[in-house]
Length: 195
Image 1 (cartoon, one colour):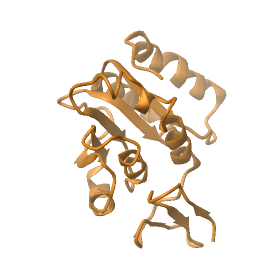
Image 2 (cartoon, one colour):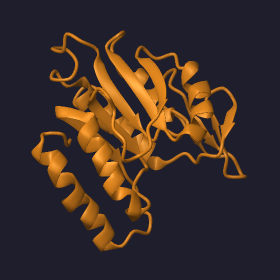
Image 3 (cartoon, one colour):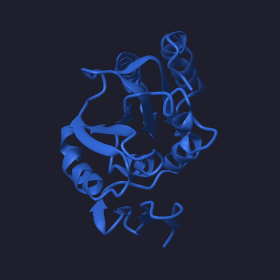
């Protein structure tokens, strides 16, 4: 068995032979541990990363709002909850409605400092209140969803906010990848929302 562990009390995912994953304290879900979760974790970890940035944390009088878009099992949100000072962040985990029971079960047991909330948010829809930081892990795998993904992020992140995408190439053509990064993200970048 291959294990991916993070330091201290952080949750872990253990790959099982049948392709399922054990999350934290034995909850099962049909989710594979993705390397991009670790990439997002490393890119957000203090002291030199966006989550620890003075613009997002220390000078902000209100809790930082974080969107974990397409959260899956909530693994990344549980990690992020450990990276913020106490009461310094609200994390909204979103996914399709059918994924919410497992997501709720896993994030309810998180021991991190952030407050974690769970809600449905299909791509193409937007949040009522934009967030300071959006994180996405392993969301770039079907090009026909890119427009909806970009729309959700463009309208759900505050001006001057940050977007972090953990990404592993998965058989997209060069044109599809270039189209996403160059066409879809120019609008977010111009608005000050890309990391």
